[in-house]
Structures are given as structure tokens and as C-alpha cells.
Amino acid sequence: MRATGWRNGKYGFGIRVGRENARRHFREDWRAIRVEIDGQDHEFPLRGTFWTTCPEFRGVAIGRWLRRLGMHAWEKGRPPVLELEPLGDRRFRATLATAVRSS
Image (cartoon, rainbow, N blue to C red; front, side):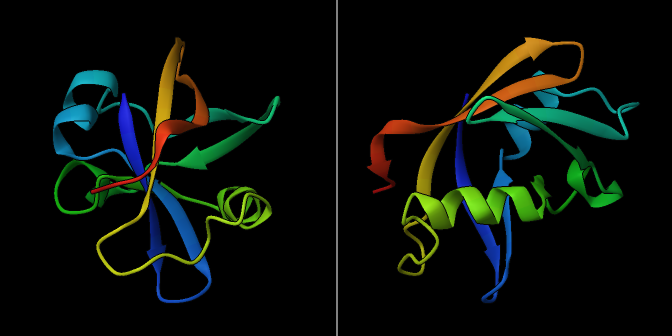
């Protein structure tokens, strides 16, 4: 599924999946997910607002990854485009999409 980088001001980073992807690929009884980033698994909580107004998950590992790739600073409205591959059992794999920036 396509997703985008998310940031809250300067230091908080996450991955925004959007409402449709949230409904399609996530279950409402999940309280956390595991995401493989560069071969390492990381656990991220799903906040209650994930299902309503904020369909993203956040964490330090995402910020480190985006910084390492030089993708941590983007123009407003132009976050990096990511792929989030469902692996089953609350697990996903995050990679940069072929199109690095959203249009």
C-alpha cells in the first residue's frame, strides 16, 4: 500500500497510511503493529485516533530511518512516498516508493 511520511513540527515522525488503507489493512482490535525497517522489526502503538482523524503511526525509529535517507525535511504538502507491505499477523515492511516524492 502507498503511504507517506508524517511529521509533527520538527522532531516527531511517523507513517501516514490514510483512512482507506487503515480500514483495508488494519484491524480495529490491534493496539500495536510491527514494522520491518531496513531488516529490523520495530513495534508501534496504534492510537485511538488512528481510526478517526489521524491514520498514522509514530516512532523514533521512523525518524531515524527518514533522517538516514535524507528524507526528514520536506516542503509542506510534499512528504516522501513510502510503500508499506502487509506481511500478516500485524506485521508490515516499510520501504521508499519508486516515486520518492508525492506530487
